[in-house]
Amino acid sequence: MNAELAKAIADYTLADNDYERATNKRVIAAIPAGQENYSPSGKCMNALTLAWHIASAEWFFLNGVCTGQFTPGGGAKPDSVTSAQDVLTWYDENVPPVLEKAKALSGEDLAKVVDFFGMMQAPAVTYLTLMVKHGAHHRGQLSAYLRPMGAKVPGIYGPSADSQ
Image (cartoon, rainbow, N blue to C red):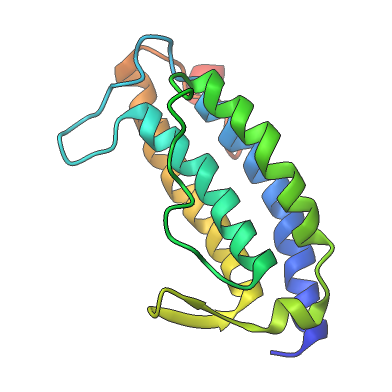
């Protein structure tokens, strides 16, 4: 991949991610207080863990792209994160600075091949598109938790049945 194409893809993807991040935040904010431990089955993450995963994975992917390497253990949830609001506070404090760094990367940096724990080697920009897909996937999971928890599902790509 050449630098010009990598930069164009990154610019588009990161602009798209601004919309997706706002939607992620609406879904996380809809988790009712006292329902953070809800999980539809023993194989599923609970609501708080899933919300944390959405927020921390975005930081993880952005940081990996910015530094040119992915490091394990970057997504450990601080003990102070015990509610959806805590996740949102962390998200707002930690993701925007690394997002701005990613937006400022050169095409050359974005075209460099980055290793993903020996499972995948791809241009850095590839991980930005993976980040958006990963967030949408897990946001879909979390949105499916909301009604059984007694919450309303916010609009994601238009109004939901709960917003009409």
